[in-house]
Amino acid sequence: MVRFGAAGWRDGQMIAPRRPDPGPVTDESVLLLHGLWMNRLAMGWLDRAVRQAGFSTRALTYRSVRAPLAVHLAQLSQCIAALPNRRIHLVGHSLGGILALRYLQASHPRREGASPLAHPDIGKTPGRFLPSHAVDPRIGRCVLLGAPVAGCDSARDLAGRPGGRWILGRSVELWHAPFDTTLDPRFEVGAIAGSWPLGLGRLFARAPSPGDGVVGVEETRLPGLSDHLVIHINHSGMLISPAVARAVVAFLKEGRFNT
View 1: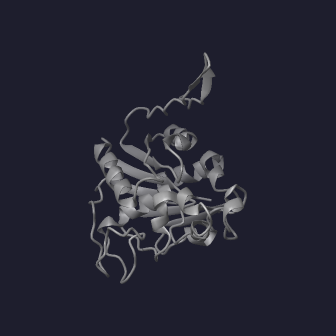
View 2: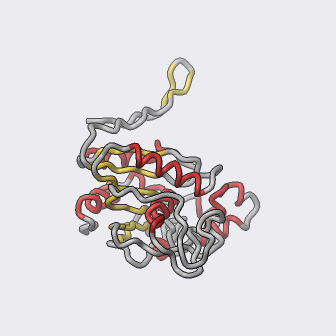
View 3: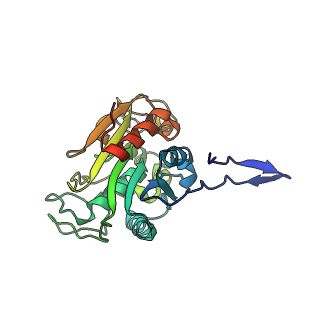
């Protein structure tokens, strides 16, 4: 069994957690994308669960606070292009889910007047999308975990509070324009929402209800989803939840959560 190492101390020095072993290369790979203020280690538990289901895995770290969405997309595109697998799936938590969705929208015309997730440097022409990259033809399914794909009230609320813009970093650019909610029918996309409003997020901003303490259930819905599932879990707890892991694996294999 492949184990995900934890941080610890040795001879008075901190030892960083070991990277998850990506395991043997299989026909299908899953690329995991973390949320705001996180890195790839946050996806370690879910990474292991997906690998144990027979997939190759890769977890990507991107500078969620300091870099704009366009930079994240370029990094994601390069990472996908470097993978050797025949088929590639995406799993994104929170902001990582928005990044995954925005990647899939690259070659899809957006609705009149809609913002491509509000980034000011991409797709300025109303009614059509100006892609910054092409979607890799090997892309298969995508699972969004607690991803506010229809907007995020708590982020907008936080942005207006003292220190809020610093906490959100460059991601603040996402929250002040209408979101593009179009889905390319070539891709099967499933979304999981949490309904247990427990977490530190409620101390800093107003969180919608029902929701996971950060993202409202309705903020995770958009037209054209292949499936949508609500689990009694909070926002961060999704990353270490056996129920969420089972649902993710089911969707990656079958295109449905099978609950």
